[in-house]
Structure formats: C-alpha cells, structure tokens
Image: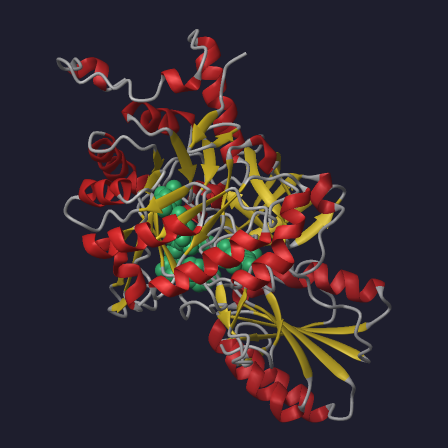
Length: 254
Length: 314
Ligand SMILES: Cc1cc2nc3c(=O)[nH]c(=O)nc-3n(C[C@H](O)[C@H](O)[C@H](O)COP(=O)(O)OP(=O)(O)OC[C@H]3O[C@@H](n4cnc5c(N)ncnc54)[C@H](O)[C@@H]3O)c2cc1C
Ligand SMILES: Cc1cc2nc3c(=O)[nH]c(=O)nc-3n(C[C@H](O)[C@H](O)[C@H](O)COP(=O)(O)O)c2cc1C
Ligand code: FES
C-alpha cells in the first residue's frame, strides 16, 4: 500500500456517463492483483471529504486504468480532471480474488460498472492457463464494458445487445446446459444482482466469489466503518476494505 | 532546534500531536505509510472487557465536510489487544495511550487493571462519551456524579496519567472537566463526536443503522474550538483538543486557544500520514516565527479588542 500523487495521462469518455482514466503509477501497476482497489482523493477540499474507492480496471505499461460512472460530487469532480493533473491515490487496497483454485472453467459475471474488476481478473486467470467465459449485463449496449475481455456473452435490459433480460438469467441457461463442469464463478455488480446470483450458485452448488461495493471511510482498516454481516454469527462482521472487497458468496449476508 | 516535547503528569511526550481513539485502529494497520514514533502517541480504539462486534451496517455516512459514524465500539477486547497487538507496538517503540470503555464502573476498572499488569501502556484515556452504544456506561459522560465517581475510582488503580475524554453533548462541558480535575484526572480530552443524523429522502430512511450517530471531521471544528476554549478557562489540568483537525493551521488554532496537545481523528482516513505532517508543520511554524518551544504558543489567544473585519478573513 502506498499513498502518492500520480500524473493523469489519459482520459477516455466511454459514453455520456462513463469515463476511463489512466495514470502513470508503476508502483501500483506492478503490484496490484485482480479485485483490489485504489482510493482517490478527488481534490484538496473537504467536499467531498473522503476518498473514493475504484477497482483497478486494467494495467499496462506501468499505467493504471479505472472506469467510473457519475454518481455524485466525487465522481463528477473526477470527470473534470485534465491530462497532466495529479491524482492523490492510496493503494492497492483490499483482498484480491483467489485465482489459485483448481476449477475447470472460470465464469466471470459483471453487472453495470461492476464489470470494472473483471478485465484484470481475466488476464490473471488466463495467465494461469484457465479457461474463462465472461457474462456481462447492463441497461443498454452503451453501458457494456467489454474492452480487454474475450469470450464475452452479453445481456441487456432493453435487448440492444445479446440476451434480452438479466445477466443472471443468461448465466442460468448456460449453467443448465453445462451442468457437469467443475466451475467457479467470480462476480461483481449491484447488490440485487449478487443476491440472485448467490441463490443460483447455491442451487447449482458452485463456488462463487463476489466483490462488494460497500461505503468506506478509510479503505484500509482503521475506521471499522465498512462492516459486512457474516453468516457466522460468532464472528459477526468483516471489514469490506481489508477482509474484502472479495468474499465467498456463502460467507456473507447481503 | 524547537522544543516540541511536553509533560502530562510525570510522563514526557515527544510532541503535541496524537492520533485519536477509534481513528487509527490499534496502530499497526498503516505501518507502511506512517511512522508512529514521529508523533506524541496513539490513542487506541476504545478497549472493552469482552470483544465487541459493533453495530450493524451501514455504520458510516459522509455529510458536508463531515462524517457520521455508528461503529458501536467494535473492538477485539482487552485480552486480545494485550496478546496480539501490544507486543508488536512495544517493539516499534510507539507510545500507546489505551482508551478504555465499559458498561459499568467495574468493567472500566477490570480493563485498566489488565492493561496495567501487561506493561507497555503509557497513559489511559477514559471514554465516557461514545454516543453510539445503548448500554448505560457511556452516559457517565453526561452525569456529573458518575463522571466524578469513575474518575475517583480509576485514579486509585494507577500512577500513570489518567485522561478523561469528554462529550460535547452536554450543556456545559466545563462542569465535567472541573469534576474530572477535582477527582484527580491528569488531563481531559475533548471533543468526542456530536450526535448527528442524515436521511435518505428517496427511501425516507436514516442513512445509518442506528438512526443517529457521531458527527466528526472539519464540520465540527468550530464547535470543538469553542468547547476547548470553555474548558481551558475552567481548569488547570492540560486539555487535548480534538475535532476536525485536518492540517497544521487547524492544530495551531487549538494550541492558541489553550489546548496543550491535539488529537487527529477523521483526517487520518483521508491521509494516514497527516499526524506526522502536522507535527512537522507545527515545528516549522515555530522555526519560521522564532518560537523556541511549541509550548509558547499554547493559550496565547488574544481576545482584547477586535480583529479588523478585513484581517479576520485572511
Ligand atoms: C471496493 C470498491 C470498488 C469500486 N469500484 C468502482 C469502479 O470501478 N467504478 C465505479 O464507477 N464505481 C466503483 N465503486 C463505487 C464508487 O466508489 C462510488 O460510485 C463513488 O464513491 C461515488 O462517489 P460520489 O461522490 O460520486 O457519489 P456520492 O455523493 O458518494 O453518492 C451519490 C449517490 O450515489 C450513490 N452511490 C454511491 N456509491 C454507489 C455505488 N457503488 N453504486 C450505486 N450507487 C452508489 C449514493 O448512495 C448516492 O445516492 C467502487 C466502490 C467500492 C467500495
Ligand atoms: C469512525 C470513528 C470511530 C471512533 N471511535 C472512537 C472510540 O472508539 N473511542 C473514542 O473515545 N472516540 C472514538 N471516536 C471519536 C474520535 O476519537 C474523535 O473524538 C472525534 O472523531 C472528533 O475528532 P475528528 O473530528 O478529528 O475526527 C471515533 C471517531 C470516528 C470518526
Ligand atoms: S473503510 Fe475503514 S475500516 Fe474499512
């Protein structure tokens, strides 16, 4: 974990509300693992006061990329940055996806901006020699973030790309047809999607890791603010920033 | 060389900047980013007799220049602190002030006794002021008699400095400081968080699970300064100023008003190294202004006449 100012090197608008930023940060690019995130202070003022967490979308040639949508003040201010501006970044933070399991097929599932942690994950899985298939869901075609990803199947709410319906319905069809496979699911997306997914993985008895987007004050374990409820009542809560953001889907209460 | 050290009771601290309880874990989480031997010391997360899981999520919400939290004193408990955290901290020579909380006076005493026999703690801060737990104990901070009683009892258990941490959620915080002083406290620290609330207008639900929580951060600094001002004018014992300190200037304001030292809370979440920067910043301020000892700044507020309107904006 480091805290440093990095120079913004590239700004790519993906659509009217999603932006991709790249900054030159060899220290992070060379150490970050899939599922980890960085925490950005968007400017020096106290509005917003706290840093904003973003998954590392991709790394290449010593530079780190994030993609984000405009939600409020923090992300709005990030869209106003210019090339050459410095970004105050803390990271990499959090526990990554566990890519060392011995599944025959890795299934990646991303909903909306939850796709942001999948490209780096796919890269690592493929480097491990694994077979990977990716399912992406979004409102419309415009919101599908498929760059860097291979073997992608899509679902959109309006049917503008791929399956007309939710990504979990599409996944269910796939699982039904490929029942005997020893697979593992890696997912990130809105909570309702993760809830449905968890039900499906229980039904099919498939291992599943999910990445959560919990409100965070610090991002590295000193405030106890990002508690996630565990099924294990003895332990009670885990910290999403330090014990997560990636959890086994069967260990937490969503 | 500027003199930065100062004393509370019989203990000398390296400098006047500390990290506040609950805002730096147990002092080990940010080791890579932050050299805790460069500050006066770390106030630990409140320690209770048994481990506490804390309140259900959501536990935090950001407000205008502030943060509302409802952590509920989640902590690993005093025994685990002693066995798992303290040995490492001792090795690294970080000054540790243990913050103690409890539901009954007996619980405060037991926690203190365990810490006392463990060695390695420099002083104790008694938290009688957390707004986020239901049990009676923390209402000690809003009851003068209870504040007196708890101070008197813990005082007898140790010769190390006792610091009472006060709540701003009372009409006159100076009354509580006076009681702590008369029962033998070596110092008081204030403010703990202010009771605050935030509502989601779409769902009409409170934004944290316990409906109300504790407000901290830059939003509370003016209130904190006023409370510190009230207390330094009422007692002789040292005051730790806490509340919204985010840079050197903020810390200097508290010292000028009369705080002997400061604690940094919420700002650690944004910049884990901020307390070291502020400690350095204060030293630089002294160097730049020909001040030989940081203590010479303490209590130098000039309330005679009025600041010209123009100047006061600068
Ligand atoms: C570990 C982690 C990784 C993340 N990775 C990414 C990422 O790669 N790309 C990305 O776009 N976002 C990501 N997020 C979410 C991102 O941090 C938030 O969108 C951002 O903090 C919002 O800040 P803001 O100041 O713009 O909005 P705020 O003013 O904080 O919030 C504005 C509104 O948006 C809502 N909101 C806040 N966060 C979210 C959210 N995650 N989903 C839906 N609504 C939200 C709030 O409830 C509020 O109503 C991640 C979050 C976490 C915890
Ligand atoms: C997330 C959080 C947890 C806290 N936990 C404790 C605690 O366990 N014990 C305590 O005495 N004060 C606790 N506090 C209060 C702080 O120590 C401090 O008094 C308060 O936040 C005001 O300072 P600040 O504005 O610099 O944060 C906590 C504050 C925050 C924000
Ligand atoms: S965000 Fe502070 S502990 Fe997780």
